[in-house]
View 1 (cartoon, helix red, strand yellow):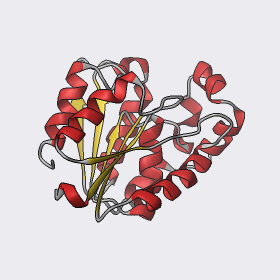
View 2 (cartoon, rainbow, N blue to C red; view 1 turned 90 degrees about the vertical axis):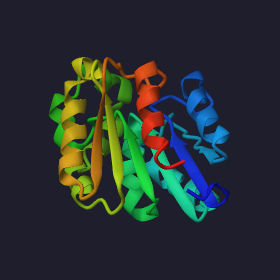
View 3 (cartoon, rainbow, N blue to C red; view 1 turned 60 degrees about the vertical axis):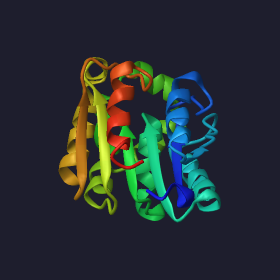
Length: 198
């Protein structure tokens, strides 16, 4: 990576912002390597994922450089996958890709459904995860934690199917990791992958 001409976009998980504590290590790690980090602001309240995606496209187009990378966590990973073919970054990193696509909806936990809200759920029903994976034009690395799939079993299926259907994707299962991007093993797994690039 030519760090002078590269931008690394981080998209946080649902209700999070990149300035939150759990993302600070990632921002510092990339900045220490001389990478320009774009801390994507996401207005989660009263917005569907499709609206969030449209806002991210505008943010990306305003801040992109010659070489661009996108890393998203949880619903942020869904946004990265949704927008990848439109934005064509050099690579995307999907951390704990949420199982919220049309084909996942029957199995969505009732408590999460209430948390997400009706409008957001209706929007999930318009998203085809399999089609997004099959048509993905950019390389991807998909991560999930060994422990988080005990809590979110559908997440494992979504991550594995995405890698299986995509033309150029790699799966990283993080030993012992919960749904927590700043868990030590998760951090080390991401750093290891990023060290091959920056």
